[in-house]
Amino acid sequence: MCEIGAGMSDYESTAEDTYQSIEEDGAEALLELINKGEYDPKQSKYTDTSSETIQIVTVMTGYKSTDVDGVSVLRTDIKFLVPALGLPRSPRSGDKLRWQGLEYDVIDCATVQPGDTPVLHKVQGRL
Image (cartoon, rainbow, N blue to C red; front, side):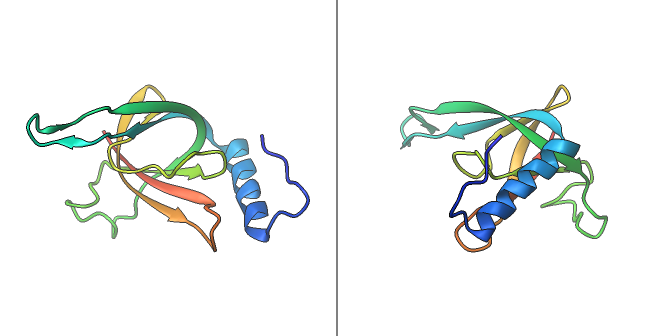
């Protein structure tokens, strides 16, 4: 757990509070951040791909029926609330999230970021 230090901005304090709230009420999960290298058109793939798996806490929620359009958001998609504190970067399409024995593809991620401090990631996961 991170400690609030002297000189933290209000947004850094908000990021810490968000982390603590999700840690209290959430569940452990694994987030695999996949870093693609250069695209090689001859091989039709990315080269030098690497990944980093990070243990996180998350709260799972669903989408409102009005958000489900059958294209961008499917009925079976899950929204994961992931605190930004401690992550080296925002989750993005192509990453993986493992929660309760299931592996979800990260389809999209909306970051709550007042000012220059990321606070929360709303990760769209799909089986």
